Image (cartoon, rainbow, N blue to C red; front, side, top):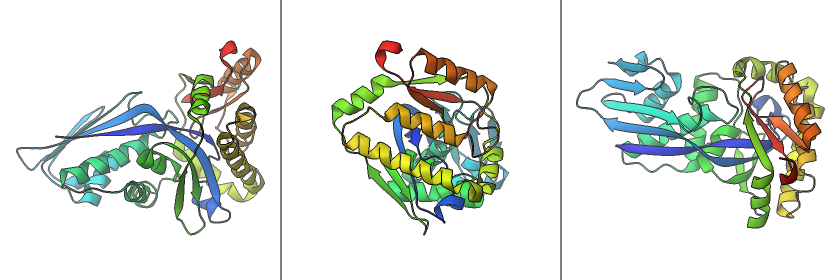
Length: 298
């Protein structure tokens, strides 16, 4: 049996600039970190040639094309494992297919690819796993998403990720003192809103269409990512909460549905209670809210 363990992620700044509609015009960038919450994939050879996939439902099929779960189906086809396996996935959070804003679908596809390659006795680099995951989600399944989640899941760690006009991606680890990381962790609070996020595809499809009209805002969001990187490398968190706040104000302008009255109410209550800034994670509408807040106000 092969078991893979792939991290979920939190994105702090630059979200939306990893979309092709933006980085083909200007270089995109995000600051994100893997977190200690994971998606687990188990792959086991079966005694027969049938395929079994276990998640919130159980699928048992004779042919790979008959699998309903699109990510697992395409991962099997991409790796050439087309018969005689049992695949099960689970997550430390809610079911991995539910939108929490933590990059769970990309963690799922990266983990599945990794496990299937391992089953074949193949070692695949983080770069190759991320590229294959992007090809499956963006090209084969035509999801209107960006590239940050796949690279965050495959590489792990705390990174400044740059998206270049030619489609290449640079993953640059953020180097800062351990004390800075510890202070950051102590000052971050994440809450599950209890709100089911609206369709990621709907929000991001609109965001893609609006890119040309939002270039100025998106350029500023890249600047925030750069500023956040510099602050961390200089071990200065004084402006961290303010950058999160300004980025959240801009993000709301990119498409309808990113926020709603309930999220706005939660956010304002947190700010009044002492949070310096925050944001909804992922495409918006629900899922998890992140705040930067000094310990004395938590």
